[in-house]
Length: 221
Image (cartoon, rainbow, N blue to C red; front, side, top):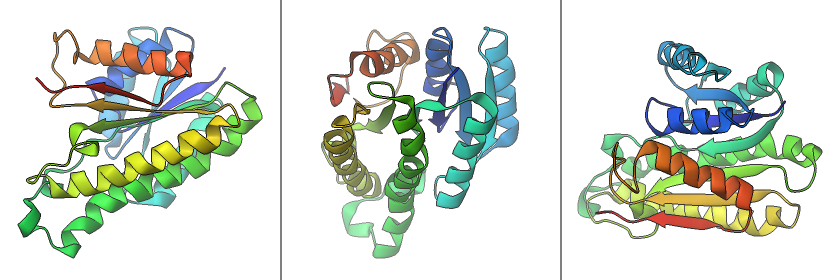
């Protein structure tokens, strides 16, 4: 049995993805900073028949991310799918002329150092699974492709993450490891035809199974 590790797991998209992959037999590693919330989410998912467990980590601490992913593998099975989708902090989003070098440290740790640490932790195991098995999924807001003057931190850091993801897609694709990015413009909205969590989870499932597309973009309203 293989697992999906969801970095930035919460009650919205993370839970929807856990249910979607759980229906296909995946065990689910839930990763975020708050162990209590993770435990509550795992209990909720268990009621839907999904085997999930929470592992606390801070994406701005690469060692804690690596440790949590190692625990997912040891506890739930080899990681076949990694999803990197934590929500950025509000203080990352400042107007461009109010953004100092110090203001960019957090966003870069969050959106670049974190995923680099995660990828280096999971890729060796994905290689062991064999060709056309492993998948790395990045989920970003619209500023990853169109920067916004009032969300400078995420605009800069998401752009860097998007470049990293595209390079990974090129290199790891040669080994049969799929790397894809889902861009969500605006807010995730329950009940929306395009941006409901279950709809987005289905898109992420299709990126994993289709294995032929780097980027899918859902536009803002």
